Image (tube, rainbow, N blue to C red; front, side, top):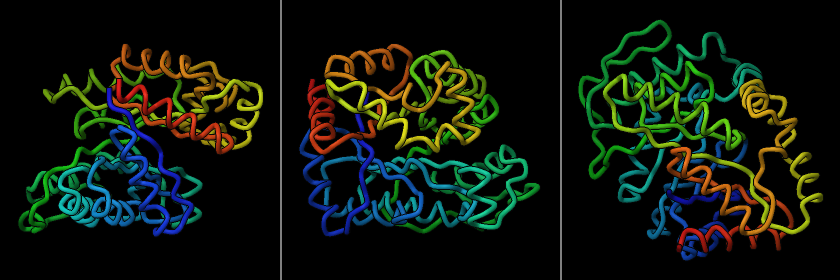
Length: 302
């Protein structure tokens, strides 16, 4: 099991660099950035990777619709070259309300879009040429991308439903989940993507599981805060489906809340399920967030 942290990027870059150095010293394996309405995640990671050489980085996740796969491959390989091979590229469809309202793009048949996207992206990140013509995406690059020193970053697809898990298992290197409970990871995510990878003759996939975490004794307050902070995820269809599968009323019910032993038990369950990386998203007041990082660091150090 590898251990990662969602990195709070709501600060100037001059503050993010020393914070990344501080977290790298904790023994945690990876720092992850989301791509929402702030920094461009890959650009930011390129900066951090050059300044902080002691830790891995990942995107959780970059939406695919606004970037043609050739451009995303070039960006990812640039970060991979700059970091010496420490990037995990997490990509996802985002959500209909975002793609249609923010970008003015069609969200028709998103499963088809992701499959065609990967048909172009995966050869390029492996150092091969792209040559694919689909229904909505096409590319002929006439050769590989010329980015010296770039190795192939693992590509993780934000896959939750059966069809997307099948696509991720067949074409990508794994999945990065969010707001998906421990039982659902064990009974649905891991078996689904493993079966698809096995049927395609591909290696066992990487399964990175992201969840909100608050190490605290005040369970009631943490649960209430999680309900407010993460409320939107209970309204987005893809996450709502996973919460329903878990039997959870809302996001707070899949958050990891409790003392250090509770966090260790949750990670043990994920390890037993076949997950390969746990990505903690600390929440709560400053003391709770610091305690969460310290608890994860202790587990990572063994």
